[in-house]
Image 1 (cartoon, rainbow, N blue to C red):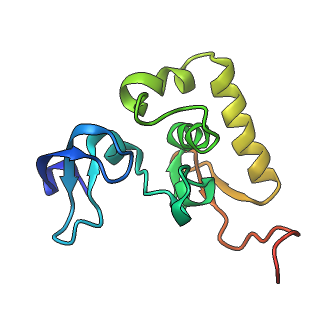
Image 2: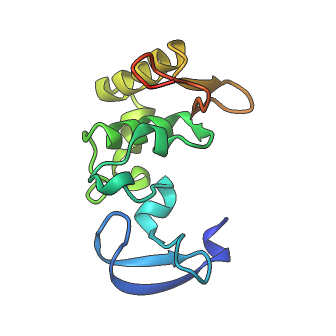
Image 3: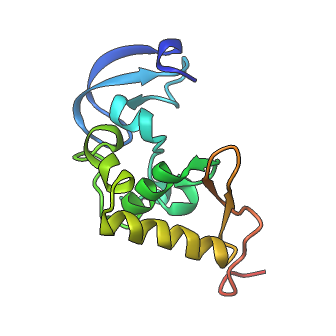
Length: 141
């Protein structure tokens, strides 16, 4: 979906990132896909099971371009606060320059891909996705 396909309205709180006075993008009549512009670009979803952090599994449920996947990994680790640092305006340079945190987050994604936790594709663009078939040895069968 594009921003043009959505309606917008000013509300006091974003239901996802809890940001104040953000413009929300409403992608339907039931409000389930409601998010602020800062969250819309990142694809962030509400935290699961009442936690205050979104899991990497949730953040990478769909194929995600490498730079956004690294940003979401940083958010999942608590390194990046999406309320204060949006991908497009504040954090993109971390992944598009010779930045040590960007290298570390991409290294983490590659390590998780090597372990089978994430799937990685190279074409048409480098992207990551959580492997839905992955089961940790600690999980019940």
